[in-house]
Length: 313
Image 1 (tube, one colour):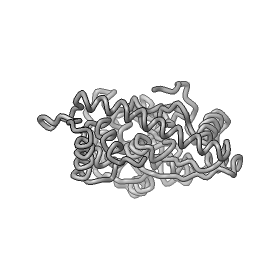
Image 2: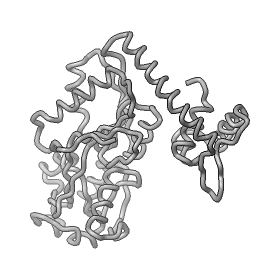
Image 3: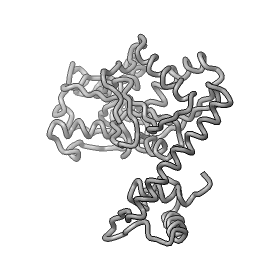
């Protein structure tokens, strides 16, 4: 889109935050403010009210937001139509996936897709769940695959697999011989956790909340940015953690880690996240259909199971 000012305005209006918009757009906050002021000068009216650190749209701002939403939707349709004109299926699809999904679940699936559709190019961007959702919101990627709940009403979220999580400990840990563990069995143990913004961390924290336990109750001893780092720390006896079955399958088989089921069980959906658009790129439709069909086939041991939920909007 040629009018960067409208893009910046639309992001601020959607998030109602100049700071958050600057983060999402990878701009400085003064640059975001400048772009919005330029648009306000063009229309000769104020688009936002800023009172007591709270940002709200003026009546004029709400009007511009409605038109901007239609403009960007039409622009997306035009791009998709041009791609379709060049070939019903082909070109590239840009995926975004959270770390666990990208490293342990997608490689086999994407390999099967590319064997069936060699004419399609796949580009993959990896980040935590929060970052992937932001990329979908800003149309930086066509499809996100994440392992945490997504509540954004502007996006379509479709669960495709159910992932089972386990408590992991070193083989000589005092809990290693337990057949099941409850939350209170390991609350006082040193706990190794993912960073803020990680889907795995958020699911763990929600698990605590559901059982009436404070999120601050875990004895966090270390925060690490990848499942591999967490597995290494736990195997070295630095503490326990909770990870997906698919992430720890190899280490459990080799006897480097012990995985213990939680009581009550801890599960989460692996979900497809994409923009709600009237017109989508045909290649994306083909990929979505393939993923849905792939997730209903027989899958290898350790792969998450199929949910019974429906897509949410």
